Image (cartoon, rainbow, N blue to C red; front, top):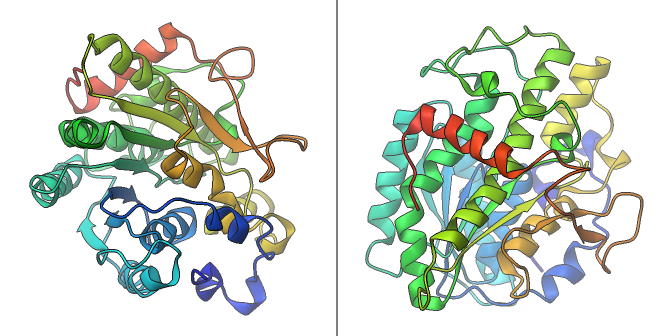
Length: 348
C-alpha cells in the first residue's frame, strides 16, 4: 500500500482513519510515462497527491520552497514509488518556487521547461498550493499575500508552462490543468478586482473577517480562472486541432490538514482536533480524480458532496456558475484581466 500521511502527524494530532482513499487508489490507472507538476507538495493535500502520482508510476516535479520539510517530503514520495500498483516511476524532482515572488515563479518555470522539453512536455499541471487567513501583507511585488499565492502566481505558472501542456496534448491526446479551490469561493461577495491590484497591506487589516474576505476572493478567482481557461481553450481550437488542454477545478472539503489547524486556531484561539474531520487522504480524492480519471470533462468542478450523496467515494460535480457560484463570463474576463495586469498577457 502507499505510505500513510500520518508519518507527518504528531500523535496528539492524529487524523481520522481514511474512509475512501485506499479503495479509491486501487482503481486508479497507471501514470507511467506521464509528467505531473504540482505546487505545494511538502505537506497536506499536495503531499498526498504527489505521493499517489509517484506510486502510480508518474514523474512528479514538485514546486516547493526549499526547506527541511520539503526535502523530507520528497524523500518519502520517492520511497513510496515501489508501493503502488502502477510500478516504480522515476524519482520526484524538486524545483525551488516561492509563490510570493513572481521572479521566483518565473525562474521555476524556466527550470520546469528545461526538464520537460525533450520528453513529451507536461501531462498535468496541478495548481495545489494555497494559504488561508493570512495577515494583510504585501509580497515583494506589492500584491496581497493571499491573492498572489493562491491565484496570481498560479496564473503565471499556467501561462509560462502552457506551451509544454500543448506538447503533451499533441503527444497523448490531452493534458490537464487542475486548479485547487474551496467551497469558501462559493456565494458572495462577488469578485472584486481591488484584491488583485498592487495594494497589498491595504486590504482590510489582519482581523479574521478581512483575512477571510481575501481568502474568499482568491478561491472565487480560482473557480473563475478554471472556467475561463476551459472556455478560451475551446474557443481557440480549430477543426483538427489536437491542443486538447483540459481545465478542471476541485475542492477538498474540510479535512485534517495543517490549514485546518491554522484556521481553527485563528478563529477560536486553539486548533481543533484533526480527527473531527475527514483525513487529508480523503480530502485529496477530488484532486486525484481530476488528475487520473479518464472520464472527467474540461470545465468540471469536483469535490465532496455537500449534505451527503455523490458517487461511491462521496464526490460530486458542481456547475461553476450561478446561483451557487458567482462566476459568469463577465467575471471570468475580469479575473483574467486582473491576472494579466499583474503578471503579463496570456493569449491562447
